Image 1: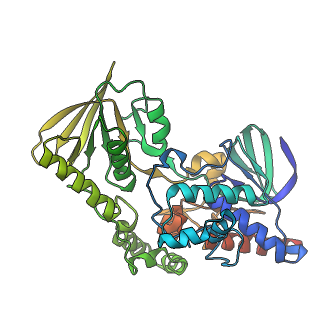
Image 2 (image 1 turned 90 degrees about the vertical axis):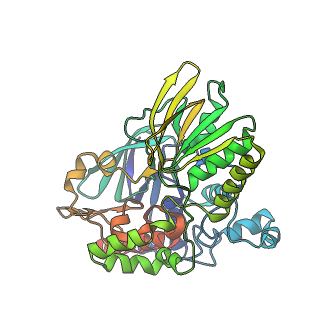
Image 3 (image 1 turned 135 degrees about the horizontal axis):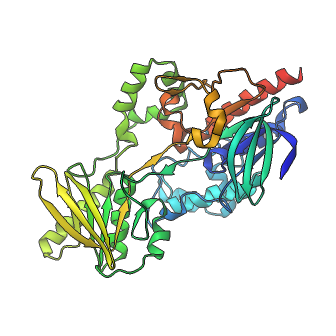
Length: 423
């Protein structure tokens, strides 16, 4: 596939961020003058829309308000809000009776899928972006898969999402894997000879995995390995949550590098290695009840680390070291689940040779306030980032919190350059 059309925007990735962008483009095109309309298409490696399907665990809920959906903060009257979804599904009154701001993760995934099926957007699923080239009048995205070739666009919006990371020295296998596809890996587990799991990590996902394994596999024990003494509660207090407000992006962007670093450190507890307090209390109560009964299945190894994991024919021999004493305990288990986080957009991989044309400072790639990469030489188009901008725009870079507003800002920026070009 070589596109003869030169789109205004080519989006790489079609997760929540570029889905929000597609909605913003559609709503913009409905009301703008013809000279300001934007054409677009999106490239997605998955065969269909999906948002972390391997972690759609029963009972898990969102950690942000449903009002931080794909549209509300940009356009409260949009037909793509979570409330509009509830109304169309006939569940609005039932949801109101729940008296919560935090829907289940399963329902929010259904909302996102509903929006992806509803939006008027051209999406090439099953197609992977290989790299990006400068075409002189914009850019070309070289692709492979279901539609291979080159898609041309004046502007490129990169929203490749997050990449699961394993600790150094760990090779993924059928028995050692990242939590990102927990359900898929559990379904493919070779055997459960030892009826034991080990979970490494101290964040929300790690705690949810421990809870799920302990609740689902009632014949099995679960060993949680944390470098901390225990799970730390997430700071979701009202003032701390201001760090996720759209106006906080302006504050962060205008700050010095030193102040940016300080703000990120001050508010790490809102997002990194932090767990909802009710889940912490539930796990502790469960572990304590087992201490009382003497029938232990849940073991939380605080101030500890996994120092070795040797695969054997029937499972894994995991060595857990207690930091203060240096004592090591061997745990024979069926699988080690690593809830060890993600890395943001891999710019060198997606940009290919064009990566050398990007300007850098001491903190990373230079990015304008409207999310455009700063290039060493002038270009006819722009490359926008949805993700990978925590060093310039703050904590909302890779989160759902600011999708609606950020999408509107990118659309406004793309329109302004299009109008100047046309004139």
